[in-house]
Image (tube, rainbow, N blue to C red; front, side):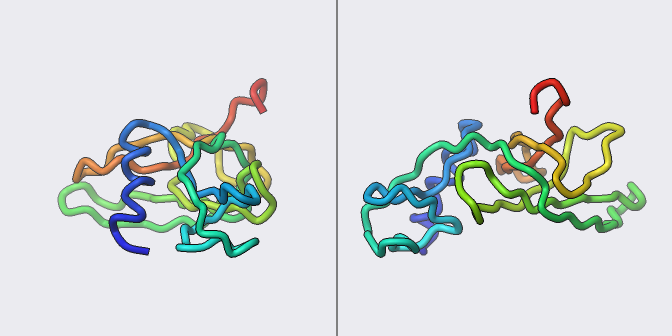
Length: 131
């Protein structure tokens, strides 16, 4: 895949939409994107919105030292998305306040701006009433 191929992912994120590549012939979600469908080998692929809903499959926490700011804890989650078995995406665990990440925690995609202005697809916990 080239930078131009993946640009559609970033363009959607800038518009606060979570889109992944889907095969138009068999419906398979192809992520990470490839020139051909992993399931049927078709090259009929399009970027389609996904719900962003899923569950935490695993997570990792790291501490980063920022000059003048001390250590900051960053938590990344690997999320199993609802659309298809085995469809996963990795992002930061954000907007969590007092909720610690754990396996099977219901999450939904959210959008955060990085320091360079890139819109990132991250994940936040789903309120219990919404899961």
